[in-house]
Length: 68
Image 1 (tube, helix red, strand yellow):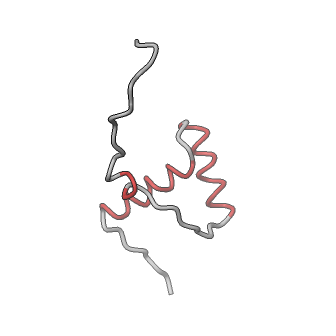
Image 2 (image 1 turned 30 degrees about the vertical axis):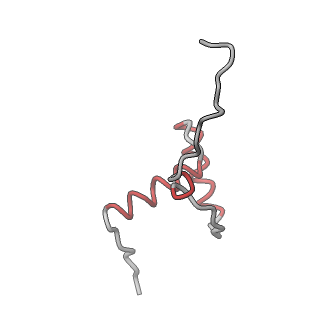
């Protein structure tokens, strides 16, 4: 491994800003607790777990089953 690396000619990833976007969501305390417990079990940050779950819903085109 080199002692120093030259990054003077490096460029930023042009797609990085499209990977994630910060938003504010109001989630129930029970939902947050669930994902934080799951994060402790898996070692994956709870916000990443929430993102993974929502991405799975998008990919499978899941619809909310609403009981009236």
